[in-house]
Length: 252
Ligand code: 8X3
Image (cartoon, rainbow, N blue to C red; front, side, top):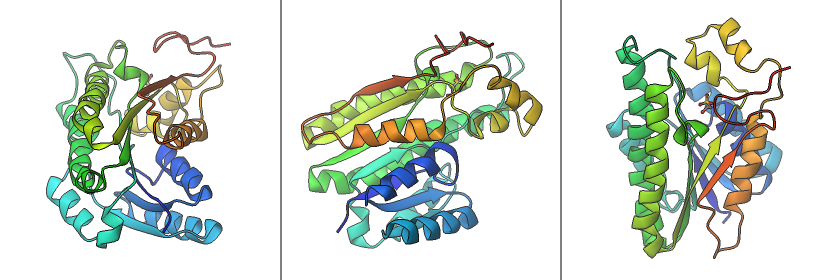
């Protein structure tokens, strides 16, 4: 049987692009997300284009009971996941701490941090049993730096970066690799979501320079996942050429 990769937040952006790259490389896929229709469409397309098997799990990653229940519906052989890509995550709002929206904060903490923990808890059981596996956490440049109004988003990504190191400590004795990838500016639905659907604000974020694409990140994730068995890439920071730091972008 082909190796199995589970990708969270697979219905768009980096998750979807990553699903395509792994499909091209003959992995079987478990795609998770909230939108069943999008999961079905992607699953159909990838299984027929690349002659692989795909399972979809539709749940809200913030719901710990749903994550557990949904994962348990997989056939036993599919619960032995080779690679887990913790991609589901979002930024919601860009406001100073004194006026930040509490709903936005909960959404980011519950998705980026607690959701990542819930699915990791389910998947690691099978990895421990097999004494191998690879967890790749999609963090952010916001996991290394903070910027004005980024407060809670940056805090969740800093937490993803520290959890990556903590997981590595707990799991390296079981032969399991753990990595984080920290992208800078990537043009996806990220900014539309951050600005609650305000396209004008979202488009400004990527104006005057060439941002990364979801495919750039997907290729790097695949590179990390395809190193020889004895190699673990602990962390990878990847930015557009025009981005010198989270706050410094050379716009024309
Ligand atoms: C997304 C990149 O710079 O908006 O994680 O934090 S940034």
